[in-house]
Image 1 (cartoon, helix red, strand yellow):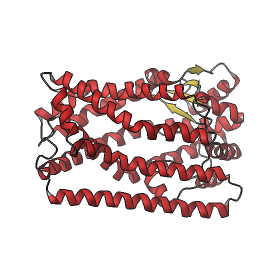
Image 2: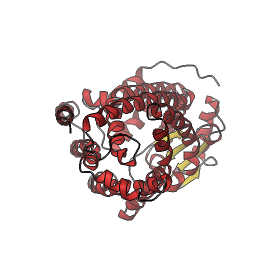
Image 3: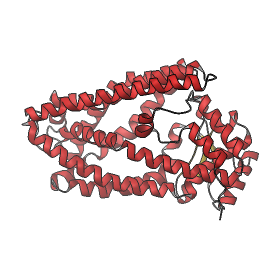
Image 4: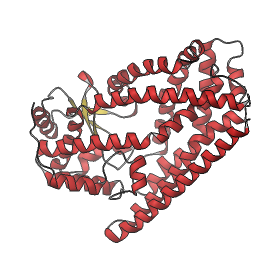
Length: 413
């Protein structure tokens, strides 16, 4: 391996570790300030935050270390050789994917178990059974990784035929997939994990229909999902497009909030739809895909030139290059986080403004957000660096200030 590449890798991990350390201690200092400003906050909220930060740091490192080990150890090349032994592109892609993603699934399982099972139970955020947790993880693997494995031959066929323009053609294919997934996921994928029940005929459903009517989108479905078997936290969302659009309320939200508070949260989700955030997100994602795939193409080509064949391959036209592409995708996704987080926060602020205008109920909006934060052991704000890099929503402090000061907008059907 070229010494320039070795130095670049060492520098990258040094900077990544430095970033984790800076964020961690920024969060610790922020929590110390919050203890003084909010003496009523639960000790569990601070402990939970510290534990989740540790998980975040480990996970961020593993995001790059695991695929790098597959590359540098030659394991990826050996899997590719085994998978391609006398088989066609489809069969070898499927076999490589099942082995590679299966190993990734097993390697990640202990940390996933700790973060999504041990910690929620430790802090009273879940009564989920172990078998239910395992069921969700296995279903996630089968749906996402198995489908990916089945389709690996498509992008690699494009890479083989278009070694210099593959990034553009693959991006063109991904965009309609995003749109299709947005349409079909609420109807096909989501019900695999949870049970969805219509509440349109219930009193709450009729109240929500009133909000939808006021917003001019009477044709949206209204559903309750049984998330209480997975978590004690609360949430709601509006998803889908055209005939698939629906408002979904977690049953924990319905059970733990007053009706006016539920309506406030629902109005916020309606705001996302009315402000065109689904369409905007698709456009932003599409632009991002072109840019990120182009950068992946340029940097991966440069790395392969400097690697001197140490990975067992010299171009991307082999399934053995999958870990390299994953590292590149993770890198540029990580670097683009501040931009995507800022855009997400901007959309959330728009939805918050719409929420207040639709319900004209400031206090319910405030109390609902306070309860959601308390129930999930959240804190009023993160550190500035964490907010910039990762926070996709305004802080609780910012939202309360907006709820109490924003002027009503005119709602037009």
